[in-house]
Length: 284
Ligand code: C5P
Image (cartoon, rainbow, N blue to C red; front, top):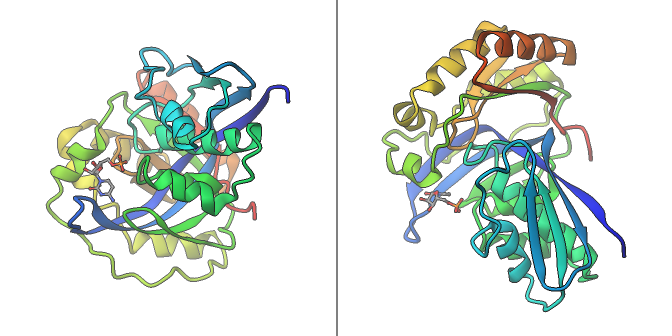
């Protein structure tokens, strides 16, 4: 088999409610998770042993050693076969949009194909559970209702089409630190979300929810406040932080609106990473 590419779409927590800390140290969660066209890119080719090369705008300084989630994913598949893996890191690291988890999930998919392991999504999700809370949800890159530590997933039929702008102020926030600073929780009592009949319906629903990690992340990285204000100022239908931050997102009705907002944000904040994209919400 020759080389092939697998995309690792950014993961967006459209909302994230946090419940009690479990005996295993992880918190019970509820989240509506979607993915974007924007993401990292991985390529896979046969090789001797497992090797990883990293490039791309956010590749600098990343370890390509045994601690990298991509290498750990390869090891977790438990075969002695080799692979030459190249990661193009387009997403900021430690930024709440699942970069490392998406790369890990894409590796499980890519190597399952390269090595002919014949593992389906559910089997790969099971392997991914051990590697990180967000890895299982990133296996399918489709809208999911996420519960438990992140491993209990219900695939949703589709979401209304929406455009999105991702904004990161250039600060990395460690997930564990944000959970550690969490004081107020909404709990995990919501029923499965309804079938959303249109963008307005989805936005209305999201406005009744929150990201519980926003408050602790704002304390650790005050830049999050400025990012959220700036996105709202560009007329987003909803502006919110994803995951444990510090990346925030704005939802927009059209691609034109999202691109205009992104241009304005880039012009006003040269140091921020600003990425207009679309939710991968209509792919079933
Ligand atoms: O599973 P992952 O490595 O992404 O988790 C990183 C950290 O985030 C954990 O060590 C834990 O402190 C926190 N976390 C949590 N509850 C979750 C997921 C993550 O407390 N459901």
